[in-house]
Amino acid sequence: MNTQNRPYFRSTDYIGSTRYRKLSMASLVIAIDGPAASGKGTLARKIAERLGFAYLDTGAIYRCTAHYLLRELGADADDTAAAIKAAEYVRDHLNAEMLSNPDLRVEDVARATSKVAANEKVREILLNAQREYAKAPPEVNGLPTGGAILDGRDIGTVVCPAADVKLYVTASTEIRAQRRFDELALKGEKVIYDDVLSDMAERDQRDSERSVAPLKPAADAFIIDTSNESPKDVLSRAIDIIRGHLAEQVAKNAP
Ligand code: CDP
Image: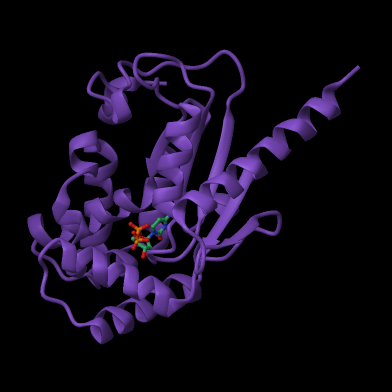
């Protein structure tokens, strides 16, 4: 593979990795999907920390695309040609700095993201980078890692249908809207709960009803409802599921 054209796998790599490296042993792939503010990002980060795995927030890749379209191309989210141009730019220039830009998190970018992400060509352009990350995760803190965690909407169904463990993290719309509202209020943004709720419901509907890679649990995903659970409880449930999977593998491979 030509790593020259994959700037996001170069020296300033994601989560402290020092250089792109193919692992000689098979590494574990954990797919986490779910709607907005379900807690999947928090869970993914915590599992990655606990297990020393590489973590890719695939939503940030789509957000970068919408961000480039709005802020650099000055286009409208419904402009298909601009969305494709933006996706190609992101594919060719993706790096850790782009993915952590705080401007990706503002609500107009979130709204535009779910429109841009419904475009089949955009998804096709961005698919390979996600699959390659899962197949050969970058080092974490200078060490080869035992696995990759990807979170998004279609990781268990489209990006990594053969993932070792699939989690689908969800919560009621009202609770998710309250979480997003608290998050925005904490950042000092003046927001109205009802607006956050209706924006979120609209985005969920678009994500679930689109014809390409809609948000839905894979048939073999474990569903985790975080409505009434603390992040700590959610983490320990997920770790139990992963442990269960590993124990099954050990039993299967026993002589
Ligand atoms: O943080 P939040 O859950 O609100 O959003 P996100 O995970 O950053 O994703 C933003 C948007 O990107 C979603 O509303 C989806 O439309 C899109 N997305 C997608 O289509 N496929 C993915 N694998 C990840 C995100």
